[in-house]
Image (cartoon, rainbow, N blue to C red; front, side):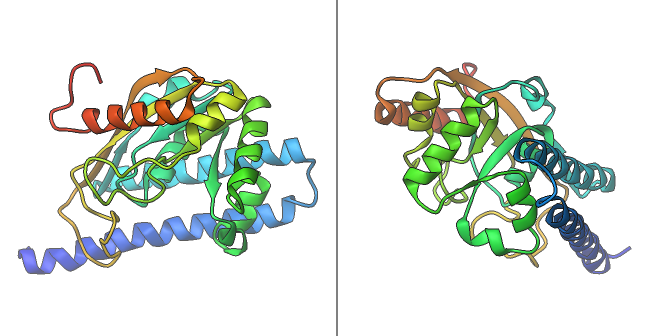
Length: 250
């Protein structure tokens, strides 16, 4: 088949997978809206987080089978059942949270308060008791309480998708949360050469195929007495370990 004919076919398949993701999300959020008033907080949280994780896992299974969109995040599996852990990662794409949460079914994410009213995300996020960022202090308090109760927290310290390679400046919060909750920070690197759904890349534009992501574990940081200094240390570590080729220490 000529290249100019194959391209719209590939674009249609890719859009079809993203449509499937939207349908999975909408379907689960309809279920979550029903379950939220019926379940006790702890039970609802467990079911809510597992439901989101399995939904994203289904999407990645189908995407991997298609050969267009590939994700290898098996490196996260040893963290799956570990309580009281902050997982921090770089943020090259809109798909990053889907990769991490799919492998970490007990994890919570920090969500924008405005998304609580989004029909594709809001009911499921409320059932899972995701952390809202209405205020910095409230976000920290919710995150600390969740971690102390045995939860996991997935955070992207850049705050937004990477604009300046290798990483944006890290925003404060993650090291303070680690100190107050007395939990470690596990660094995670998301490696990709694809620009798809990165900052400034439109959804409709077809990137080079296949789109490939891989996840690897980095160093684990214990909570520190000086959160600001530790945040700078972790940012430097990420910057060094995301350079090509990665240093052996990473």
